[in-house]
Length: 304
Image 1 (spheres, helix red, strand yellow):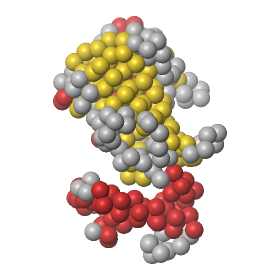
Image 2 (cartoon, helix red, strand yellow):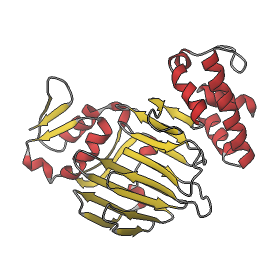
Image 3 (cartoon, rainbow, N blue to C red):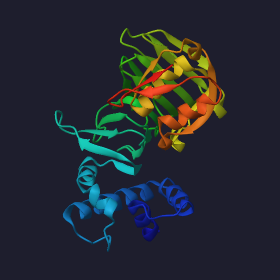
Image 4 (cartoon, rainbow, N blue to C red):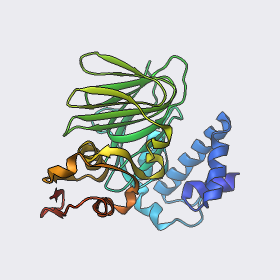
């Protein structure tokens, strides 16, 4: 298994082998600790330029050598990523992971909770979760699979909202510019609170979203659940006007929609994030008559 673990850590592994390794890692606590130990040793070996664990350093590893240094220090494992990563400068013991356009990251936190961090997003957390709560701060979108830890709740701060759980699977999206917030619950139970201390409890297959402080709770079908873990931007019979903040978060772009007929048009579909925003827009054009163009700097799309 050690050989497979090293193939997994270096990224030189088949899908079948990857599935086997992930199953082994989560099969027992000692397996998880062995994986973390090897991951740290590998990170340190790359930073020091040694070949104690890997006989031939891959080009991608050289590119992320500085990144991996911080991964070892922060004790967070990056299972798969296209990101830049740094240790927080202002607060000792705090770490921030960021992703850029079209990229995502699969993270293993210090408590062994898993996070799938979406594009143009950042997650900040302490290195040890040593306090009474496991607190993280999110900007953008992420899917969480939180490990149960007795009476030590896991709290996600996202803008003016906080999502508090003990052990569950859920997603969170927060868009500072528009004030949009959304959380969807697949398993367990979560409590959502805002800056005014209003509290709303969600049960499985319930979704809470808010635009500028007006929260709405509704049910959703599991088949429509967020597919961020699969690298997909997933929508199910949603009006385009409600998609705007999600698209802006996912693709790091500003949408200026000047075609009012488009706003109430509902869409469904799954779009590979790695294909980019134009892939989505060209697909949506097949069902609705609109045109689009970029501004000079490429950070705004005008839709007419």
